[in-house]
Length: 363
Ligand code: TRP
Image (cartoon, rainbow, N blue to C red; front, side, top):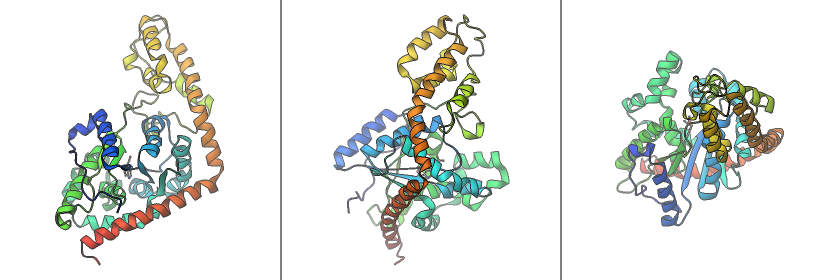
């Protein structure tokens, strides 16, 4: 067995949220110490078109993990069903386009495993097994659960949605994922997952760890703001989409909010509160200091800034968009990549499920 059968040696604390640099050190240390690539697992729900926030916040990181890790990337379609069960056509339609953006961003299907969650029934079987030892109160305590119940009400008051973080743990545990790149809002899910793993190992492990406690790793990038200054998100209608054309992108940039006290060129601006400035960081960090100085002094007006930014943003996105267009045009190739990855994922998940069933005496 190439897998380490013990839990990682480092502890997780709330430090996870801030200690990104130290996590990277731990990650690199793990590579050296174990003399193998650490297993990284992450997923994304196919609920709609991807945007700049996905690209710079998540996918560039995923692309790097193709080199440094043994990486598994999941199309989390069952997770999408927990909230969009009344719109299955959108979920089905989003699948290939989502993977096309992953590939365009540099995720390499030959150096990682791209798979479909619902195509790996071992994950669902694992969920049934782990549900036996998952207290309902732990699930009810997860902040995203409470938040979504408040936001969406009865629609998500389902058994399936309550189990969302357990299903997520099963995604990870089915591959003995060690590192899980996720956003801040997902850290609580990982904490819950670690508790369930501890409980499982305690109940059934008889001194050895059958499952591994996964560790959240956060993107080194700060949150990516959308055109209105809130977090870029499809549901806020403030996103610059990978699939947008250049005119649409330019129009969206022109509509962006900036420092409300900078009315006209000449007024001194505050780049630190300006979402256009925040996006410059991703698109051309070399231009940051110059933009900040010119904005503060009043030499640079918002209209001019947006014009220059829109041009550079389009330039930055052009190669990604070209690759995206080529990938979506070859649907057969995308389907093959997903099929092959799913077959590979199933083999590994089946081995873990066998160990779990054996530990639970389901033999
Ligand atoms: N819940 C994650 C999100 O909304 C997506 C996801 C599903 C995931 N399964 C996962 C992330 C497993 C990491 C690991 O972003």
